[in-house]
Length: 376
Ligand SMILES: Nc1ncnc2c1ncn2[C@@H]1O[C@H](COP(=O)(O)OP(=O)(O)O)[C@@H](O)[C@H]1O
Ligand SMILES: N[C@@H](CCC(=O)OP(=O)(O)O)C(=O)O
Image (tube, rainbow, N blue to C red; front, side, top):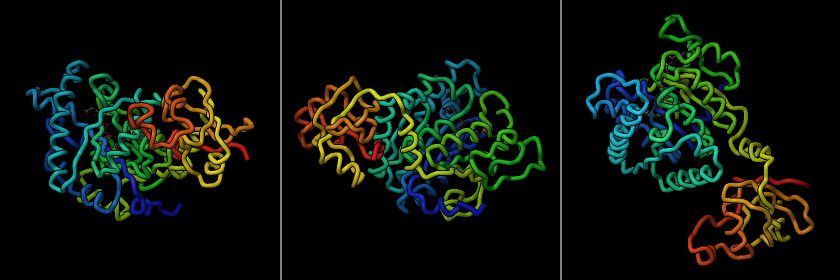
């Protein structure tokens, strides 16, 4: 297999996940110097025009230090409390470090349920996209106050993959405490060999990753699963040592560091395939001939002005079918407005949305990224 490392140099959107094992000094407090080092590299990569989203763990460890706790509690509610306290220190540290390079950060706390609910999915997606368009660096963590899976299983890797899917990243970089993924756990086997590159779907990876080990550490298996999840939306994953000098800028230069787990499809194609596979539709939009033409021939988004009628009961984020005036299927996609809102804005120019609804949402009824064509 010829190396795909060049992708890291040409890609325009990265999700970088920094794990607890790496962010903390033996689980006690944040490693400020290490954070300063990654931020410096991230700022340089941002300067090259790469959109960045950071998924950072470390809230529990930072909270323990602030609360003066020497040992990690077992009680989930205490871990949640520590995470809530520590999250303050975590975002403060990132904001302060990124400020040195004139960059703003934003705190984004989400959970898996948010992303399996399509309305919340669209909302999270548009917030993250707006932030990255503004040049802000979103700092994402699990919302540990309302969910407990991540603090119990020590797995923010899955969250990293979900965020990569959400923003259609081309690369998911998972920084960890080992130099990459080995053919067995290097802590227990000093002879273990680094895997440089393979397909994310390579079934041999499971046995190499082991079962996750002790409580509170997701280990390699959660990273392998995250790589597969990311690959489904077309993102390649690199599992790499966060303590390697200039690791991020060297990866950007396509240097062969860590383990590259390759996705077998492009982000956009993957997303369209996922959309096409969604069978449950909640409503129908009847398009005029002009809208059918621009969708089919120019691959454009669907604006309210091109819609003649709406049917069904749908809310923002639901899948709807678009038909022409002869009821032939033209496309399907995730709608940005509810049935009631759509009824009020169809046939109208997007400029009028604010006066019709009293607020300004998206210009499009269905954005082209969320639309797949059907039929001839
Ligand atoms: N095949 C493997 N290659 C590398 N590390 C492995 C492997 N199998 C298990 N591990 C363990 O996974 C750990 C990293 O996972 P984890 O502690 O959850 O880190 P993080 O906080 O970065 O997510 C390593 O320290 C290592 O002991
Ligand atoms: N969300 C929690 C824990 C998540 C966690 O430890 O995940 P990981 O970095 O994959 O080991 C925190 O910020 O402390």
